[in-house]
Image (cartoon, rainbow, N blue to C red; front, side):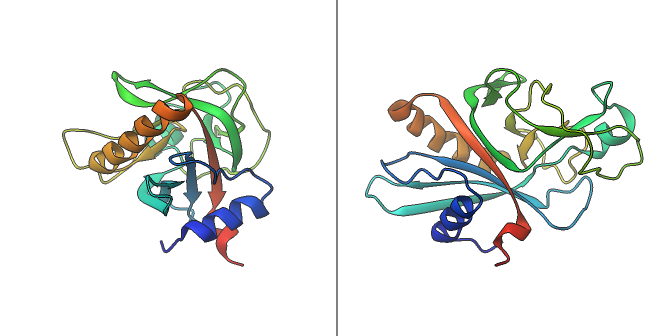
Length: 199
């Protein structure tokens, strides 16, 4: 996906969200959901935009999924109302620098922060509409495996935002850690649709 710092900034603001562009390493964490309704593939992106040590506009983009994997859509819903699918929008102070399954990651900060749809028909297709729930817990930002290359989302996301490659994730975390030393360890996240960039 081709994307610039300026295009991201303008799109985020056009959607009515806040974009942080004052101060070095004042991070904008974001996800972009693909327009292709494919299941179990890392066809989305996650990224970060910020001003570096010299005030240069910087944007990093990583292959990711912003949707749950097939395991949770068909076999184990994880919730009586269905598997969580994060609704695009901006979620202020939603993540803290914490842990996911024992390793450093972005951890949900508090309850009632995220808005999700829930898919409970087990047909293996994404239901991106319907009632809105705010009961989700443990919707983190993390990676897949530090041991193997992972091609399919599978059980790695039950609604979490997941960077496919662990090396990319280490870059992601290193920038977050630098930002946390300046601004604290609580971060916002903005989920956009690929179609938001069409105009």
